[in-house]
Structure formats: structure tokens, C-alpha cells
Amino acid sequence: MLFNSGIFILFLIIVVILFYVLLHKLRWLLLLVSSYVFYMTWQPAYSILIAFTTVVSYLIGNSIEKNRRKAKLFMRIGVLANILVLFFFKYFNFFNDAIMDLLGLVHVDYSFSGLNILLPVAISFYTFQTLSYILDIYYGKIKPCNHLGKFALYISFFPQLVAGPIERSSNLLPQLEKKIKLIPDNIFLGAKRIIWGLFKKVVIADRLAILIDTAFDNAADQSGIVLVLAIVLFAFQLYCDFSAYSDIAIGSAKLVGITLMENFNLPFVSKNITEFWRRWHISLSTWLRDYLYTPIMFNHKKWGKKAIIYSLFVTFFLCGLWHGPKWTYVVFGVLQAIALTIELLLAKQRKKWAARIPNWLYSNISIGLTFLFMLLCFMFFRADNLTHSITILSGIFDFGGINNVVDYLHQFGLSRVIITLGILIVFVLMDSKLSLISKAIEHKKWHLPLYSFLAFCLLVFGNWGNVAFVYFQF
Image (tube, rainbow, N blue to C red):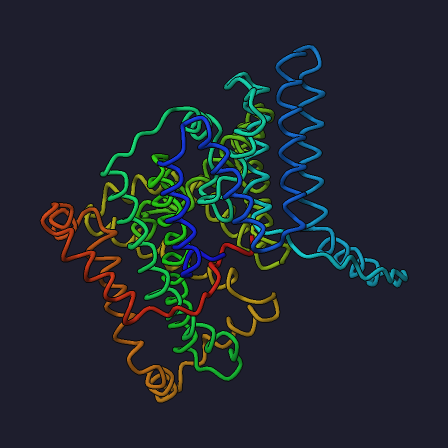
């Protein structure tokens, strides 16, 4: 059941109506059943897996709290159990193939071809939620949940189950406990956010995908200008697609009075890679900071600056791998670590440059260089494999074929106008908090005409092909 489908809209409306009709003490059960129904529309059998992970994490959390003398042992068991489940279903075949390739280099026969298993939807997201829950109890940040059903809802809450935001129990669990009243503003804000997310997804991202897939799937036959254009457009597609999911998730939760964390904050105006990760996929970057980067750095603090560099490489190697069992994702993560290391080593020099160059010029150059670097990284993110990425990189330097660009754009006709208009609305009118127009739009007198216009665009220009969100595969 995709967010960008009629069946989901109907499902959401029914859930919201029943939520406010039912007694408070039954609402958690409605949301839990709805969440499992939502999940089972993809892979019914794997609902057993999320239930298993939930029960194990619940029992481990209680065991840590009740027996502090063995808290570390229970914590390690819980973390290991969750990671093993994630590894088996998501990474076993990837590492099996890597071992096969390495042994082949030394002429050792290894013929096991791997396991025929499907990747469970959302496993990376809900595993991170169970891990943060266990670790927060171990470090004394929270108390364990004493209600298995409500804990199961925290893990499986359908608006953010499949692709986040990756919620912390300290934010979501208390909201599941409180009595929620029907507040018209919550309905209005939720509906507004859902419309905005759907606009990003079906009017912009899914139309961009057609242009991008055409270029990337035939990279060897494209001119360099077309490939560069496709890479730039992919950055906008990825942002609109993923931020759209977050918008719809946040809006859907708001309809039942629950506030989820924001996941994006104008990432393409970042002046460096450090700032980019404070603005992009915020729930993941803060999770990695709190549960991976900081503990590693603290454990090796005697190394000084080397501890920071070591922590960066471990964190972003795993960040890349978290996205999927592909070497292109690993390259994406390593490139981030390299850039962050360079920023660290040049910190003093960058301050000198900033002092010598006019602020407006330095800021714009920094934004431009950061965006260019992320385009390179997003190219690896989009490529099918390393061979494909090399083909794209080599093709970029073919500077001929301007007619090829005209032909490439011409075949998409009206889509060019729609995409241009959509990107203008997203990045100038709406997602730019610095824009005077954006501030004017926030005034309530603009709400009816603006969201009526967006709804019109959804109906007339929306690519309602039920195209999955990019991050569903993670």
C-alpha cells in the first residue's frame, strides 16, 4: 500500500474516523492493527519478523532495567539479535558474493550462490528504532515500556514505518499514551502536509524519474551534457521523493494528533558537508551521531584528531552500507567520510578564507561546491553498480551532442513545463524559508487558493502510476 495511491488515502480516512470514534483506551489497538494491515499489504509473512523483533526488544529492555548487574550482557544480546536479523535478510547474499569473489582471486572453489530471500520492507528503519530503544534503556535515558502492545505500535506505527522518520521512543511512546482530542488544526495541518508531499512525489519526483531513468539506463549512448543534466535532476528527484514521504508521514500522524520529527531542512543550501548532514535525513544522521559516531570517538579519544577521522570513516562506511547491499552505496558513504575529513583538516584554513572573502561570495561559493560534491555522490547512489558508475563518469566528459540534449528533452513534451513549474514551487515558493513569498504563503488567506492549486496539479498533472518511493528499498 503506497502513500501515492487511492487505496492508502481511503485507508487513512477510515483509520482517522475510527480513531476519533473509539474510546481512548482502544485507540492504540486500532493503530496497531492498522499498522500491521498496512505492512502486510506488501509481504504478509514478514509481519512475523517485525513481531519477533518487537517481542525480543521488549523483553531485552525490561531485562536490562530489572537486572542492572547484567545490563551489559542483556544489551549486547539485544543489539546482536537485531543486527543478526538485519544482516541475514539484507546483507547475507552481499557478503556471500564478496567472499566468493575474493576466494576466486586465489583460485579457491566456493560455489554457494546464496539464499533465495526477499528483502523485508522497512527492516533498516524499524531495526534502528529497536536498537535505539535498547541502548537508551541501557544508558539510563529512558525507562522501558511496560505495555507490549503500545511498544509494538511504536515499532510499527504505519505513517513512519516504511521509510521514517526514524523515531526515538522518548518522542513517540509518550504520545501514544496521552489522550488525544479532535483538534481541527491538526486535521488541517495534516491534510496540508499530505497534499504538499503528494505534489512533490507524483507531480515532480515521478515525472523526473522518467527523464532520469531514460538517461541512466542508456548511459553508454548519452552525451556528457545529458548525463550531467540527469545527475542534477536526480538530486531534485531524490529530495522531492524522500522529503515527500516524510511530509506524508508527518501529515498522516498529525491527523491522529501525533507529532513526528522533521527529516529535512533545506539541505541544498548547505555550505559544507557537515551542515548538509544536519539538514538531510535528519533522523538517520542524528541516530548515527548518537549511537555510532559519538561512542566510537569517545572510546578512542586518546587518539586525538585521529579518533574523529576514524569515527567518521566507520560511521559513514556503515551509513553507506545501511542504504543497501551494493558497493555503490559503500562508495557514497566513503566519499562523505573523505569530504568530512578534509573539512576537519582544513578548518583553520577555511576560517582564513572566510575572513578574506566577502561573506556573500564565500557563502555562495561554499553552497555551490557542496552541491557539486553531492551531485557526484548522488551519481554513485543512483548507479546500478560500480561498472555502471564508471560508464557514467567517463560519459560525462563527452562534451559533444548538443542536438542529443534537444532530442532528449523534446521527447518529454509537457513534462518539461510541469517539472520546471514544480521545482520552482518547491525550491522558491515553499521550501525556502528565506523567501518573502514563502512567508506570505504562511498567512492563512493564501491557504485555500494555494492548496486548491496544488490539488488541481495533483489531479491534472500527477503521475499516478503507483511508483514506489526511492527509500522503500532500504
